[in-house]
Length: 578
Ligand code: HEM
Image (cartoon, rainbow, N blue to C red; front, side, top):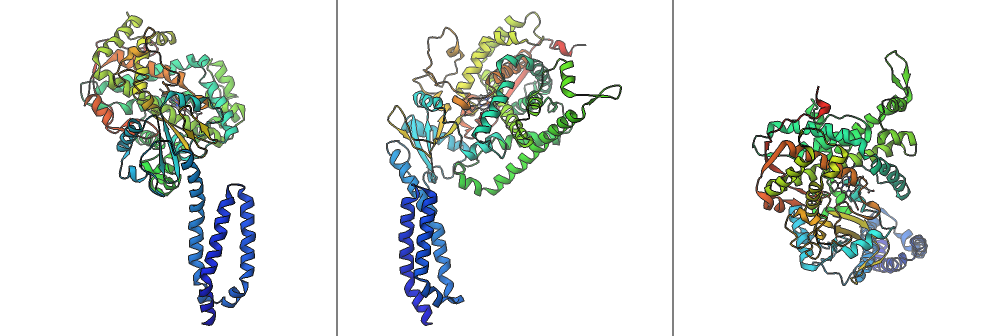
């Protein structure tokens, strides 16, 4: 009993000492983390030895009760103090950046409390309208700085060392579990860029044409003025195209008899493109707490990886064993492809180069499949929905198609036909201005960065370039809400400021396949619009605008509901003619 009382008397002293040490530890932590840990453990040992007598006297089971609260206190206060110190620095450096009222510990999580992704998106738009082109908000201990002015964006994009992305955002967005480190990213990017290089784009045309024809066939049953969400049709088509381009494999998502397999793959792509379902999931720690979301993602990832792994295994097997010829002998795949006059797919190149491990190849291909499916489907769906509202512009698109294709409106386009579609390109660019499919471009700020407008982006914060709002800035685009493809005509007097038009991002992380993407979208739209007229977009632009949700991609929650009708032409591309 006497021992117990003595240790209880000692508790305030122990706590006081421990607290003092913690503060010392925190104050030196930023100088050198390892050194401070060592110094702390040394002091702690010293303290323990000093008080050893009391400990020894009191070591019996009942007197151990104080260990629990002390441990809990230790566990809670250290991270809090550490993060508080970092936060203080971030707060000091961003004190002049405007933003909503911040709450202790939670930051601006209460500002967005209860918001779904539509409301979150609308709140972000309101924040930019209210506070200006640079706005800060906190998600717990994470500081996000939303940037919309072209000067600041330019400064971020031209800084070569600023190319990393928020880890959970990029992990989710690219559809794989691992984000390659810097050196690997550079190597991977170089190889992948060579596949989508403008010199080799022509080789993809055949693939685009074949799949756009299948797309128009699939659209046939719904082109009878019934209301349909066209997004999933373009998704299947884009999936077929990207798989063939990157892996040389025909997925047949547009023709697949096994609807479960196809649906699962498309579902996986949808899930993997979503980073967060609630705004507060922008906080990495809270993100990791969302077990059910993680499970959903893991399941989707497994499904996509199983599919990609199978394709890789088959390729590796045929590379090892060669391909069986008619006479029973085998020849090497590359030789076969060369003989057939076909270019190697990205997967063939990656396997041949032997610079990447199989897992890395799988991750890169998964990223490309996710990135190359959704944005293409979204872009086409936005264009068609806008044309359903702006019939006069749709007529002008068709006039241009007639000028290029007549007398044979049904013939497949060539690359030079697509290049000649200047007005369609203007429509596409204007659509990407109003509805950039990737509306937030994240960059980790790894060194303090001073912007021209007097603000500082501190090390440890995240820049969020909100291109949706940059594209709607009246300084850069007069009457910004108006859909006017003439803004992008050669003789338009509007001179856009550099970095005021960034639907493909910029700097070192700029979209690796933007020329490929433009060519693909133009081919799909040309083929669809020559065959079908979009007669109506349900709910008009208002419905689309009011259901936009913030996510990795900009997608209206209500979908792309349009009515279509066939145009009176005979349409059989020559590659399909007998
Ligand atoms: C209209 C079509 C497209 C648009 C608007 C678009 C837009 C974007 C944007 C905004 C980024 C982020 C850039 C940044 O952070 O600065 C991006 C990255 C990327 N895109 Fe695209 N994209 C399109 C088509 C495609 C296609 C078809 C593919 C695949 C074949 C693709 C593959 C990628 C990849 C792999 C990245 C990540 C690049 C990296 O981090 O190094 N994109 N895209």
